[in-house]
Every structure is written in structure tokens, then in C-alpha cells.
Length: 205
Ligand SMILES: Nc1nc2c(ncn2[C@@H]2O[C@H](COP(=O)(O)OP(=O)(O)OP(=O)(O)O)[C@@H](O)[C@H]2O)c(=O)[nH]1
Ligand SMILES: [Mg+2]
Image 1: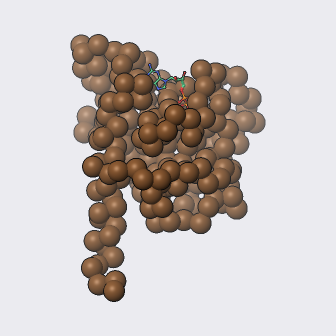
Image 2: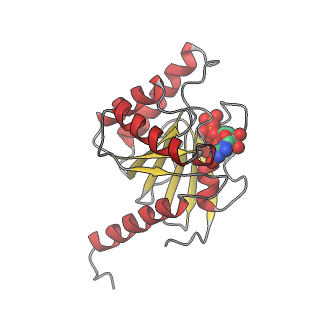
Image 3: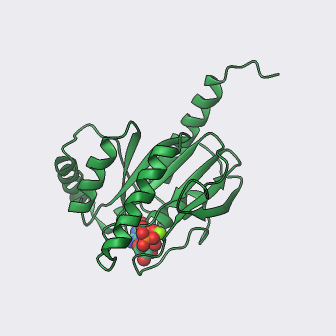
């Protein structure tokens, strides 16, 4: 499993003039406000509060770039579906994400987070459908699994698949609080890194 040797916040920004120089691999974390994006990034990186988290939704307002092992970036995004955002703020958010998805060639996967207890909201379904129009790999992360018992988990997974109208999609159940499912995400990074190095051939002497 991938070992996190270093993790640092590099910068935040809203458009390509602010993105850091690409390093080849990048992952975007998207999801409703309060779903647990920043908490998950901290759990992955094994850091208490590198990414800022809050009980108050709307904590993250820009794309925040975290450099990991000097090998890839994790990008924390603001949440959507936050009722107290104005129409203009929603539009700004949508433009920011669209631009990022169009401009950032290094984006390897989007992790779309859905609260396992709450299930897929209308906004989640719309975001999923929107992302499906891009040629990208998506992984659904179900968050806060500690809030569900075993039978709720089974029931809610089935319901979310049904709501997304996709029964084959890759879903990973996680809890940042209980540190569960994090290893599965680390495995994905490791596989991607491995694939990337074999793509480049073995003759770089
Ligand atoms: N029980 C439980 N609570 C969690 C978990 N992950 C996050 N939370 C809580 O959910 C709240 C929101 O977490 P954040 O990580 O700030 O959520 P976010 O998606 O980054 O929110 P925005 O930045 O507003 O979009 C906090 O109170 C967290 O403590 C989890 O795995 N289990
Ligand atoms: Mg956040």
C-alpha cells in the first residue's frame, strides 16, 4: 500500500492562472457541502487539519492543491448544494469546475463523494450526470459509513446505485472518523502511479 511520506498545501485558486505546475497525476474531490471532502483528504494524508474542515457548510471556497509524496496532487473543491449560496456564487462554482475539468489534462480521476447516511441528493445526481458527460474516470466515495449500521449500508448502497442509474459503478465505503476504506483509496493511487511509470517505459537511464 502507498505510504504517505510527504503532504503539503501548495496553493489555492479558482482558474488556470492559479493552478500549480502539473506533476502528471491529479485527483479532484467533489461533493455536496458537508459531505466530508476535506476530512477525507486529511484522513488519506494522515494529517489532522491540513485541509480545513468545519461543521459549518461552505468552509472550502476555492480549489486547494495538496502535493503528495512529490508525485501527485489532491484537489479539494468547495461543496455544492449549499442552500445559503447566492445564484451568482453557484454560477461561479460551476464555471470554476467546468474550467478545471476542461483545462487540467493531468486530472486522473474524480472522486465524487456521497453521504452514505443521507443518500444521493438531487444535486448529487445532477453532478454525477454532468461529470458523466466528460471523458473521465469517476469513483464514488460513500462517506460517513460510521453513521450507518450494516443493514443500512446494504440498503443505502443499493438505493444510491439505483438513483445514479448505474449498477456497475465503482463505490468505496469510507469513514474519515473511523479511518475505514482509506486503504482502498491509497491502492488506487498506487495502481495509477505504477501504470504511469510503466507507460513511460523502463529505459530512463
Ligand atoms: N461521523 C462522521 N462525520 C464526518 C466524517 N467525515 C466528516 N465528518 C464531519 O462532517 C462535517 C463536514 O466535514 P468537511 O470535511 O468539512 O466537509 P466538506 O465536504 O469539506 O465541506 P465543505 O468544505 O463545506 O464543502 C464535519 O463536521 C466533519 O467532522 C465521517 O467519516 N464520519
Ligand atoms: Mg471542505
